[in-house]
Amino acid sequence: MSRPRIHVTRQLPEAVEARLAERFEINEPGDETAHTRAGLEAAMCEADGLLPCVTDAIDASLLALPGRRVQIVANFGVGVNNIDVAAAEAAGVIVTNTPDVLTDATADLAMALVLAATRRMSETEAILRRGDWHGFSPTGWLGMGLQGKTLGILGMGRIGQATARRAALGFGMRIAYFNRSPVGPFDFPAEACDSIEALLAVSDVVSLHVPGGGPQPLTAERIARMKPGAYLVNTARGDVVDETALAEALASGRLAGAGLDVFAKEPSVPDALLALPNVTLLPHIGSATLETRTAMGMLAVDNLMAHFDGAPLPSRVRS
Ligand code: DGY
Image 1 (cartoon, protein in one colour):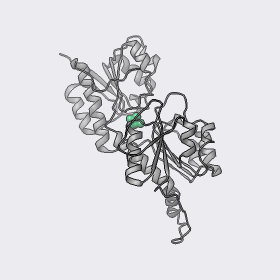
Image 2 (cartoon, helix red, strand yellow):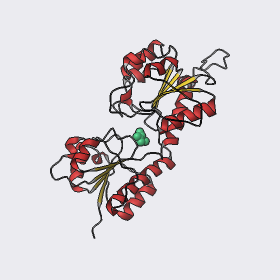
Image 3 (cartoon, protein in one colour):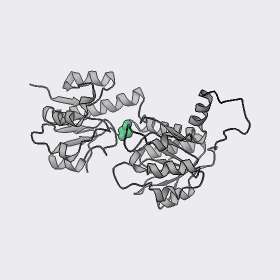
């Protein structure tokens, strides 16, 4: 019996590649042709399954290609804003993702960015590296302590809760949150806000944990309503915040700092953000530990195997 063919758009951790190869024929060019539009179009008609990552656009026209052979798109990531899930459903293509396994790693990085922003880590490291540090200064580069300050969580799903737990139990922060639907109770104290505006009004640091691809929750108007001197952390998706308005608020000093792991047009980063000292910029590494990326890959493989074995899918996404 012939083995299903899986198109893999990026190199995956070794253990994942080995497990894939045991069960499937692998189509993995290993270069950017795997995830260009032309590469994806060819793959849709040559492979039985697709294993893309969160920046590969699997849109309606790709899913409706005449001669499409792909039956399942097993996304390497929990966010599926790169996939038109409704169009996949209409075309009879199954979509799966990788929830849970990356919650802790992403929450760890969100907390790291809270610390990096409030303790001015990128700005002060740059000063040291260029030889402009002239000795310990009691009044130099003062940041903001976290104890007793309010962390505003926008989107209290798995990663939002894990970040809140770290901040509350590990750093003594108060937690305020806004979530579209009721959530809780939690194993840490947290206060629900009834609007995003109410959340922004009380938050010393705002951390974003909402999916991308929908209406923008942190618009220019809402950035203007953040507390003067507040900080913003984004480990969710770049398009959930107005990057131009954010850069202006950081440049004017109205916001004190930011930590960003995601950008609207990755891998491009707006020049206005690159020019600012008071923002830590990271290349979408929220889930980037060997353990987590391996677990994500294994879950994607579990989904592929279940589909081709006719077994229940561990993590199917529906529109
Ligand atoms: C995701 O899974 O959605 C992250 O952005 C990448 O790990």
